Amino acid sequence: MKAHLTKTVLVLVVGLLLTNSIFAQSSLSEFTKNKYALDNLLMGIHSDNEGVRKSAIYFAGKYKVLESAEDLIAQLKKEENPGIKVLIALALFEMESKEGLDAVRKLSKNDENLRVRNMASFIYNEYANGNTVSNLKTR
Image (cartoon, rainbow, N blue to C red; front, top):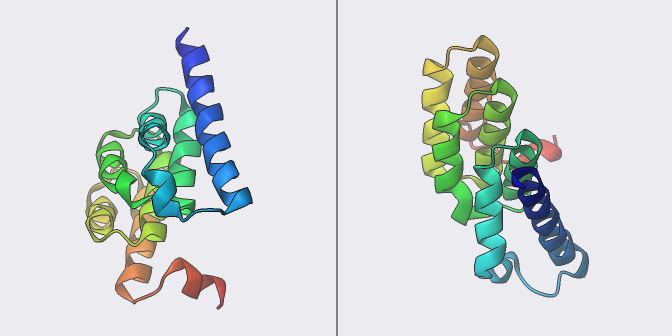
């Protein structure tokens, strides 16, 4: 039952995000005003299913869903998977969330995993140097 629910949530999140990007009829802010779309994304960020969690975090960053920043920060604090911690840091960087990047700075100093500390440090330094995702793509 739980696996079926998480798969359903993933399908809904992916479907809603892809529909929005394909048709681009409305702005992203209009998309996130849909309570169910945002709720599904937030539920995915906190999912017990690692694949659903990764997808939701990725989409939150890619589409700069700023309403998810607080949830990403909360997940960052309790996340055990080092790869997902880095993914959250990247999502927060893509969003240019000041509070989120402050959490990334703390992660770069306090995480027990060296790779996570190094990646978080690099991500935070890019932000501190005024770089954004769009700047990095044009380098």
